[in-house]
View 1 (cartoon, one colour):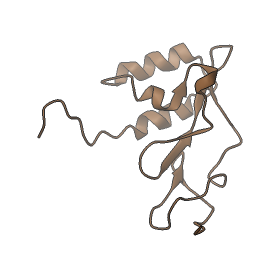
View 2: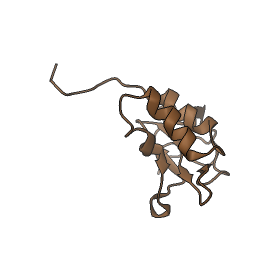
View 3: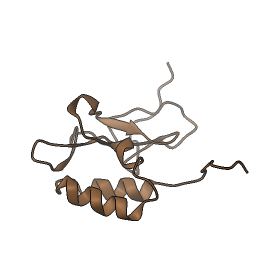
View 4: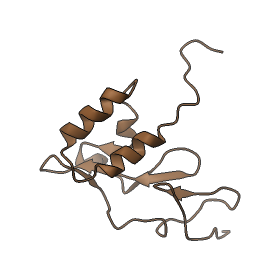
Length: 112
């Protein structure tokens, strides 16, 4: 084992928590999330504070995709694209189970 290396951390509960708090004041969501984490960096894998950093979805893991989140002008946590769902994205391969917000993609893999 190498000193300083951190492996095997699963932040899925954090991502689900953030999704469940869409529409809530960002300061409250952030405070609650930080209180339960060892570091706050994983929050910002999903949440963009600046508009130029907004992404409709983020890939967090080999085949796990989540809604990109942002903080709107009123300071509320929002989805960048609320219309995006498991039918919106296509799998990149046929061997993995690709998920969007924990739900398997509904589209099938199409070879190029």
